[in-house]
Every structure is written in structure tokens, then in C-alpha cells.
Amino acid sequence: MTTTDLVQLLYLGASILFILGLQQLGKADTARRGVRLAEVGMLLAVVGTLLHAEIITYQWIVISVVLGSAIGTAMGLYIPMVKMPERIALSHAFGGLAVALVGVAEFLRHGAALDKLALTATGLEVFLGALTFTGSLMAFGKLQGVIPGKPVTYRGQNPLNLAALALAIAGVAYLVAVPTATGVFAAVLVLGLALGVLLVLPIGGADMPVVICLLNAYAGLAAAATGFALGNNVLIICGALDGGSGIILGLMMSKAMNRSFRNVVFGAGANNVATEAAPVTGPASSANVGTTDDAAAVLTSARSVIIVPGYGMAVSQAQYIVRDLAAALAANGATVRYAIHPVAGRMPGHMNVLLAEANVPYEQLFDLDAINDDFGQTDVAIVVGANDVVNPAAKSSPSSPIFGMPVLAVDLARTAICFKRSFNPGFAGIENELFTRPSTMMVLGDAKKSLSALVQAVKGELRQAA
Image 1: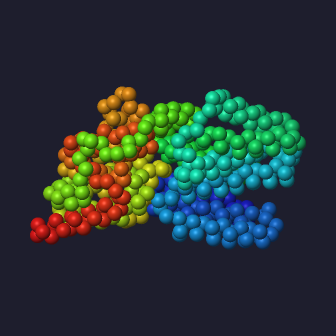
Image 2: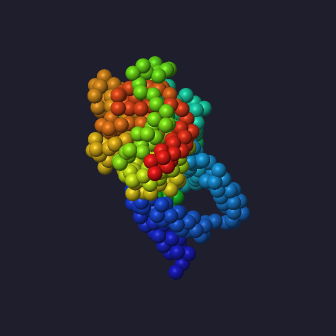
Image 3: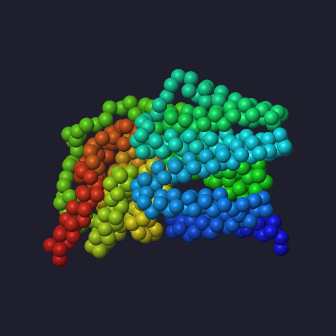
């Protein structure tokens, strides 16, 4: 077997593992196995790449491997799970930058010697890589709060973006015809960098799950283009998988928010209206505000409980306390489950990741479609930091910006206990009808502190009952 045969065999194995890993990621109970398969696939792909005959010296490669491994290990160990969306945005930025730099190097090295297909792929890879780089940095800034999370729009925004996109495509076409046009190549790179900023700037914080999916798709398509430019099969396959899955997931997230994909990407539509709403600054007069002792008295008599986590749980890092509360209720004979909304948090699967970190059993996690019909037969629904995804206005108020959005039917539970810092609105910027319903008890304050007190109160109630 020649070295070339071995490289292609390793690439084939890596591609198969990527496909199997992606398939396993579709379910919570097999997701970890899917990640492990993908990790082994990536190892095979890296080993195959290092065996390429084109490599003259390994000096800079070894330095890069050591440096990249150190940065990746530090990010994995020290970045908390609550900051996972920001970390993913940064990873996309680094990936986009790497792809763009590979395209620049390929063009500067070979230029006119590239055939038409390779030139087209190189131009697209540089454009998409640059777009992914700046777009991901913008997403990171919005998630981190460095850049305002609300949509930033201006007159002529969409025509300008479309014109820039058309110019970039025309530039790539011109490069195919005139491969020596270095200035045009530089213009395509600059247009990609500019569009990354212009496309993400008008997208609000509530749509970040869709943005992350889109950036994932852009990075995948850029990687696939790199594969065509370099004649690398594994890049073509894994890039296509990444790009296709990102687009599909983005469409699913848009459906979960009852938003058209086009509206999220180009319009900022409903978000613009919603963020102009005046925030609620004080408790609503009709709300039932209780204490952790009040909540404990209700929970100790509950036989069925559904916990609904939201971004507030992530902010307060209350997932471990939530698990302890569920364990205390289960010890009292209650059936405890978790209802996961697709767009709860700042990235797809955000709540699943946090609960998995706290070792919550996978079989207790249920998505919206699987559990929504059960709220009507549930004694208590506990809402931890969720807002828009449990707002009944999405079902009953045609004038609401979120009308038609699939929401968790917490309002149908016999009692709802909501843990929240205040009555301020969520990402959509509107008041939540659930918080003022007679069957709802509001427990205000930091979720982690409130839930810690609740766990102690529940255990105290159980000791007294015993």
C-alpha cells in the first residue's frame, strides 16, 4: 500500500465516522457517542493530512499543533458552560479565518496555474471564510454584550447587502476569466469581511440560535470549497455535512420561533417591533408573588412536576441546584421531567448541554412536541429563567409579536412556579401573560439562590411530614 492509498483510506474512515457521529448527535442519549466518533474521525483526518507527500518540513506544523492544542485545551477546561454560545462563535471565527487564509495562500502560490474549478472554489472559500470570520466575531460581541443585542438596522440595508453579494459573485467570475487580477481577489476578500458585519448587525439577540446555525453552515460551505480547491476529499465531505446540517438546523430553529428564515436573515422583522416595547420595571399588581417556603409547601404535595429551564438558568448557573431539587422531589415520590424548548438559551441544545453537565438523566429530557400535551395533567410546572418560550400570548394574542410561535403549555398546569429576577420581559421585549395568571406563583430573585433556599425548604417540609 502506497502512502497515497493510506491517506485516502484514512480520509474514507474519517468521513464515515463524521457521518455516523452526526447521526448519533440527533438524540440526547447518543450525543456523547456521536461526539466521540467525530473526534476519532478528526484524528484520522489529521493523521492523513500529515502523511501528505507535499509536506516539506514539519517544523511549523509541530509548532502550530502545540499552540492550537494548548489554546483548545484551555478553552475546554476554563470556559464555563454558560459561555458555550460565545465559545462556539469564537470557534467559528477561527475556522473561517483559517479557511480564508488557506484560500489566500493557494491563490498567491498558484494563481494563474489554477484551473477554472479550482479558481471558483478558491474565490468562494475566501469569500465565505472571511464572511464567517467577521460574522462570528459580531455574534460573539452580541452574545458577550460588547455589541448591542438589539437589531441595528438602517435604510437600504438589504439592497446594500445584496449588491455586495452580487459584486462578490461577479468578482469570483472575473477571477475565473482573468486569474491574474489580484486586485479583484483582494476586493472579494474585503467584501466577505464587510458582509460578515453587515449581515449579523441587524439580527437581534433572540435570533442568535439561528445565527449560530447559519455561521456553522457558512464555515462548512467554505471548508467544502477548500476541499475542491485543494483536491481534498475529506474536506469536501465534512464541509458538505457541516454546511447542510447547519442550514437544516437553522430552518428548524426558525420554525420553532414561527419566523421565516428569510425574515431572520434579512429583515430583523418581528424583533424590531418587539425591542421597542417598554420594559416592565416593577411587579404587576395582579401577580401572585410568593416565597421559597410558599413554593415548597406546594411542591411537597405534587405528584407530577415538569421543570422548564431557560436562559436565566444558564446565567445563574443553577443547573446543579435544579438537579438537586428534582432529586428531592423524586425522593418524595413525584415524577419529575424536563421540558426543553428548541430555542431556549442562546444556541441550539443550550439547555440540554447545561443539564447534561449536571448529570441529569437523558430519559428525563423531553422536547416540546413530546411533552406539551402532558402539562394539562401536571400538578406543578417549575419555570427557571424561561420567558418567551412559555408566554401564552403566542397562542391567544394575534397582535403579539410572538403570535404563532410554538410555546410550552405551562399555563395549562394546575400550578406554575416561575423563578425570575424580575418581571422584565425576555428577548421579545413583551410582557408575559403567564406571570399574572391566578395559577402562577412568582418567586423573584437570583435563580440559583432562590432554588438553593427552595431545596432546603422542601427537605424541611419532608422531614416535618415524616
